[in-house]
Length: 112
Length: 118
Image (spheres, rainbow over the protein chains, first blue to last red):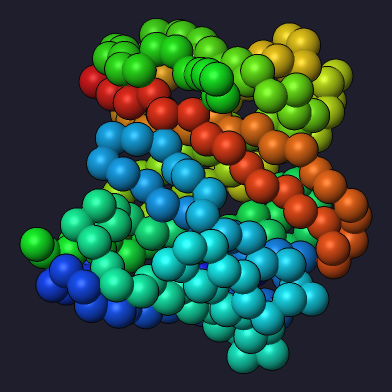
């Protein structure tokens, strides 16, 4: 059974700092991996999707990397801003609509 | 541009009551999903519908039923609510592009329904 772990569970950084969020998964046979953002009391917003054949994806200040062989993905946030404060979730899609496993998330606070 | 709309936003039920959570999407997506989110646990898939007219069980289907009414709407029904079903429920939709390792299946989520069963 696929298991997804996100470390750290919570992170507090000063504004402007670059930071890395980690996601690890136990079964490397994946189709793709998605990073989501969840604001308090809200739904999830997709940030980046990395296909299994890709190594990284970039969107603005966000960069996500994928190393299937080691079962790891990282989300890099450059020049963090208070508006980046949210919970970041990693989801692994292992094939088929039902084979999706979410991590518990990393709660990020960016202090002005 | 509404995206995925869920109703109601909040609901309190007594044990044994029934209710239906509604979900509608206006993005012409083929696939729709119901998840639950509990503290200390990742989102778990309850049911999904790969396309209009089909529904299948996810990881935690017990105690729930679903109906894919048409391409836009996917409802989740609790026939006899239990305290263990207290959770936040999310509906999502997606359109799958390509297949196999190149498949993209970006999911778009509603704002959630916060359900308490007393």
